[in-house]
Image (tube, rainbow, N blue to C red):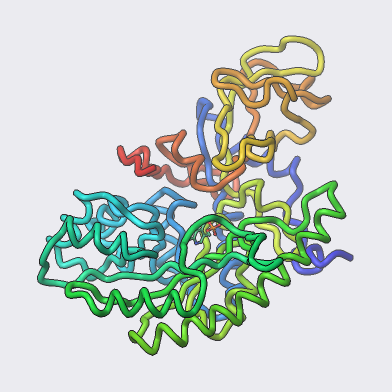
Length: 407
Ligand SMILES: Cc1ncc(COP(=O)(O)O)c(C=O)c1O
């Protein structure tokens, strides 16, 4: 038996889920997006279980729906938000969210001025260079309350004499001495308070270690991820020790949905981030150790039948960010047995779906799709229909539905 099936009993079958979703949503006209609450709650619990007692900071970019974020943050095991832009964090703070860390450096002058004007206790911004400190000082000038800041440290794996660098091109701060020197620079400046350190290992957290149909690549990926995790564990501990000698950190953040176990196992890490695992998009199908249930989907209407074995739905070209390859396309999920057309992929105005199941589809039927990534789906829909069992129990706005578009 595989590791996965031991840990996760198979949930209800796809045909049953299809029937249930159809019963729940029969009055809605597609296109619409939904969150299956049973799957969402089960994903939420599984993330908390995997975090093994360490608090999880919610990656808001991976949810992009305030109502769901509030729901998750109200539960045990979750603490604070990893926000994706400063304007978003300011907006969430106004709405009562607290403990917000902006995950990426900002050059938003209006946002920085607003942050300095208000008593910005709830928001921490991210820096990884002196250049950013200079920029922010020039924008906001003297301020009463210091700006709370977190250092972003590169969590990539460097090998072969540092000639090969694996991981996202993020922070230039990689070594203990670089981190200590940036920390010293921050605490030496007026108007700054160094409160946190973050190192996000995208090469582990965001890359599935079991890509289907690629056994050799899977083995290679696992080997690289294991080596990277053990190198990072030592380096992160050393960096945290060196930075703590300069400033008493409130938190050390790391990881994401795909790396929770290895990140929380590190004593120097005080909290882990996760978000995508709640919706369970297709990019998170390819992990050995966990399998989120598909919780977020969008339904599109069949509008024509070009020929046998093909049904065509309206819209559908909701591609995910990242390298422009097939993994970023949405996937027809229900009814089972459908696939995209290789030539057309998912189109701006129409998407053909192929396969034997297409012959049973009639004009007006729906096809339920899964997005490749999590929160990006919400940029296409102004609301999410929340489904419990076979009923729509609520309808909540996405960020877009609230007129907010941050990225
Ligand atoms: C800084 C940072 N931390 C954590 C995550 C992990 O988020 P998720 O669990 O949604 O994959 C991301 C995702 O891109 C990130 O950029």
